[in-house]
Length: 331
Image (tube, rainbow, N blue to C red):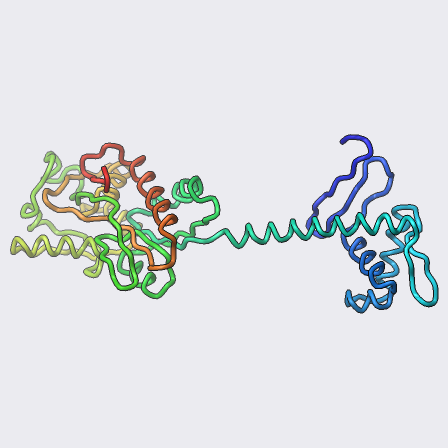
């Protein structure tokens, strides 16, 4: 630090003004405020009333300030106080310092008010993509937006959006409503996930009718992907054999890992199960779902929506570069 210059040191409890060459330990912002109030009022008693502080506390802080500076700042008399020549000089400096501090406070407050929280929902089938990477990717485009990420099925995400508990979410096959704007993200093919030694393990693709006699573990009927599967079977006048219905990805993963089980999952999940559990995955021709971005009307500006969508697609594209079983919007 250069000779003779002062610096403001910002602490948790107080702001202290320290000087390199003076030899004093530091001035607290509180002392300067008390001094300015006393000087403005010309009376310690009136200053204490304005500050809602006892007279003894104000007097002690002024005395500490004088001792710290090694100079007399006030002429004291039974009728009040007046400034000494040193006090006059400090009074001018103090008001400037306090004005600067006030501007700092206002600036920090404005920054905090500008920071917003985007309450973002994702299905369990996609949470592994976004829990780690989405927030950091989003911050590159929106430094003032902090994401709160909620994991739930599309059915429950839709409910929370409708009730206002979420601002936006990735929905499977989402549709616009009176309260929701919905925009497409990508389409992805559904896969049969099966044991390595299954009868279809050597197939590069399979047809839906080939699954009609295979016991399946599927998500509950209200799940959006399950509705797509049921509708596809019904269109071919088929009825799937549903062995179990499981919503939690962790429970489904345990079933697939320890039992000879079959299920139908989206590309984003099937790829992960293949890599982690070594399961066989086979695309089902003509069966796919659409991932969509849904936002409550008025909850986010269009610019924020665009940035969030861009962040979502960037994370997904990085995970599935040039994947033939996924088609991104705008690709």
